[in-house]
Image (cartoon, rainbow, N blue to C red; front, top):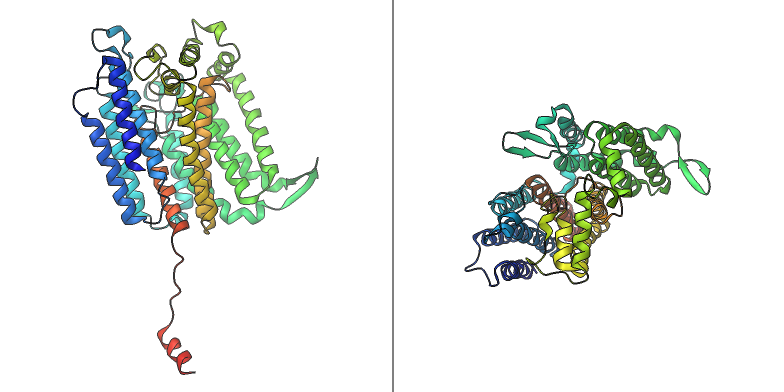
Length: 446
């Protein structure tokens, strides 16, 4: 399956060559060869350190990452061959090489997870340490000046010279460990029911503290960092993990109502957040101004139709930031609705394999951790695809494995490493009980 995923990436690269130059590019690209070597290294590491892991997780992630690299290469090359006006203005000529480098770093991080973490419950020892690290990573961009943290109105970066990193991508993983450890310890208390209202057992008022704290934290992210996407992922992950731990539908309802209320309040206080809602409701009214980006994406996907224009034959470069926030629109234009749905199905399969591991594993901490990570992956894809297609207001989150950028890609591979580790524990043989040799002799004598 991994070889099949790599073949698809190479065929997509050849298709880009036909679309841009009318012929298959001469020779195999060095970048894709390096990517293939990295994927094979990941496969060997899994066979060595997690031999019972779900065999589909790595091929699914590799397929998505490979397609993302091909699309970044296609956008990078769009201004070559005497058409400089068609090149995406904010992409360098080495964007593809950098993306492959980040993929290799991500694979190294995956291997480190498999080597250093023999079982997921090892992370439970560092519940509060990782929780503190996650909060610090979330808070740093808000404390920095705009010149070192703000990009397109959202303060979610750490920018030092030419180096930049989005700490929220890694904070999400640390906070997932914290939520899993906290909820495993407190789930009996949080499961207690209070009053019954409209057929729903509401939690006790004194147990609302954790939800209110998480709500307040997500509200602060919205206010100080003006980032709806990160706040939605952070709070959504906590509420779903709380539901998985307690099986109380009331927690979901309370969480959704609190987030909607917090978003409404923040929209009144932040012009950037209000602008996102305005563009969502009336994109074509502001098509020449603040709505230019989403309108270009919508028109590009409409131009692609059912089967797309073909790789290298569309015009996705007219959409600003198409290589990162709007790469979904590039796939929708050149692969059409059919191709975009196929990509979403691959994401769905990856989420399904994670949830399957969560159902199979017996350790409650690992169950909550991998269940929360699988959900946040699905939520991230829904938020970005829904924003690009106009279903919900646009947010600044990236598409996992597809978008250009190192932070998101490395964090996504770490997430895959955790899924593989828990899957290996769930599918592996049960440990054999250790018998005392003296007791065995006594039993035999009797």
